[in-house]
Amino acid sequence: MEVKQNSSVARRAPVTNTRATPADTSADWSTHEQVRAVVDRLPDVRPRSVARAPLPLDVLGGLADYSGALALHYPLGDFVCAAVQRRDDDQLVIERCHQASSNGRPSSALPLAEITAATKEADIAALSEKLSVSGSSVDRVVAGVVHEVLRIDSKASGQLGVTVAVGSTRDVDAGACGPMAAAVLEALGAAIGVELDAPTAAMICQRVENLWLGVPVGVSIGAGAVMGEAGCVNGHQCDSNKPAGQIPVPEGVALIGLCSGVIHEKCVEKYKRARTATFMGRLLIDRIVQHDGAGQLRWDGFLSRISVSDYVGRFRDRIPTKLKGQEFLDRFGETGDPLTQIEPSFAYKIRSRTEHHVYEHSRSRQFVEGLSRFARSRDRAVLGEIGELMYASHWSYGQRCGLGSIQTDSLVTLIRQFGEPAGVHGARISGRGCGGVVAVLLDDSEGAMQAVRQACDAYHEKTGHIARVLYGSTSGSKVAGVRTL
Image (cartoon, rainbow, N blue to C red; front, side, top):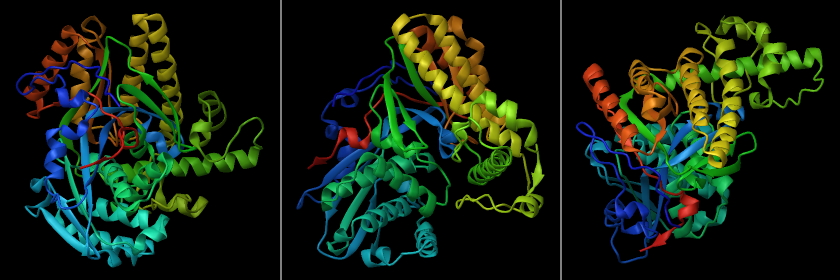
């Protein structure tokens, strides 16, 4: 599939030219130098199945995926690549192409029997802990994908071993684990003859992060890495784990990411607590619905099914603003969410964490409607409207969910100062928050890019951190398919 290119982003020190190279737009993506570097880690004595998956930019709705929201992602040009080759022994050998990400240990091995023996979550946790001594998430992701494939297709468990090589166009970090799982899964399936549909592949990516990395994310990042169409804002309806269509980014408009250079050291802890508070609110809403009678409300446990008007009119004032974990347990019991656990001594801000998800789903729907309207009408006022949705989401991340950061707040503020006159329409913290990447909606013009350059320079002067631009667009692992080299 030919990659659609929508951004002509440029940056100067610390930002450099970001226009896509020919490899980014080539249908034969296997010629990319990073892909070749991964493939070359494996000898050419046997076929090597190669796949890649993009880093999805969370445009809107990603944090609310576990509440069933409409999540919108844009597949970036940065990607994770995986190559898989069959072996003659019962071993899983992992080759890492970024030694800096693995404490200087470029490879590791373990018996496949050790992976298949992990039949319970406690077994998985123990094996994951053992693999974590490498200092990298790569081993755990690869082992997790292999485990999930063998769990789903028992016939594959009797096959010989595999070597898996993994690399990326930037250092593999927590934000790239979903795409890494997607790339490994696609290449592994081709190598051993196991075919999985796209929703199942997205679910496996989620399970790997949940069970093997201990991060209670929803399905949206995996869905974006698996199903994303290049050059499009891709929707995924998370309550049903189904794609919700793609909107090509209109001509003259660009979506980019700005990597803030910072991830809060307690990111996962903050994310878990925000999720716990959300499920507290979900439980309380369920109790209210049962007490009052459902009426016209179609409620099945997903906060995305509650309209903003219903939330404000029926629920908001009946949800406590803050409650200690022990008090909640005494009054209401556990939340029913298997991926989080209530801390008795911690005070949870239940109302604000819950309402973010209701409002975020609404914002995602408005964004889709607005982008479609702009594509038809070319009314530039619409870009300002959907940009405001991004700013509102950014505020909600920090103020309602407690997942903001000083650095990303600074970056968004600097970008917003240029505003519509400079062709910069919206920006927001994305992904799991607590630092990370800022998504930016802007004109695909030199004036808008100049504003981004100036904002990045000011951010560097203010914080000492370099805002690295993430640009371009590549297709998801299922869309791009597998190459055999």
